[in-house]
Length: 197
Image (cartoon, rainbow, N blue to C red):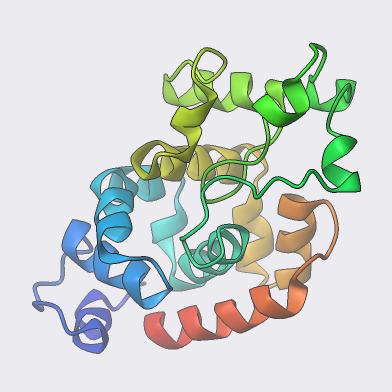
């Protein structure tokens, strides 16, 4: 059970026991987001997080914040920085990502707070949230849409189970496919846990 009033006191917002947009925005700010980005994330975040059952426990929310905080460089980078690096060059033509048309690697590069990547994921998660991301891939980088995508991805990959075990490595492997940035993810998790304790 989440102690919303305690969280609100720690965040310095009005204590009303409602984990609504104002409290969520303050939480995103504390996790690194600029105030305007935090407000945009919170505008749709409450419903998306609740629907994904992430708000059911402080531990789930802490893991979510840590992971998307890492993936988006503290909620500040919603489009993958493109070099292209050797790894990014390999996005092109990757059928496992659905990148079957020339230019798909760049077109469907990582976007949103969880960095959805690949034509297949854009189609799948765009359909789930009701946004045509194939026609408008840049929409995935808009915070109100990106937070919905992150929650849809979280649900589809059943990440709550690993979060419930407090297994940051398992959560990271599901999201990243490996353990890139594990130390930063763990540090962000510690911060989020302290806020949500």
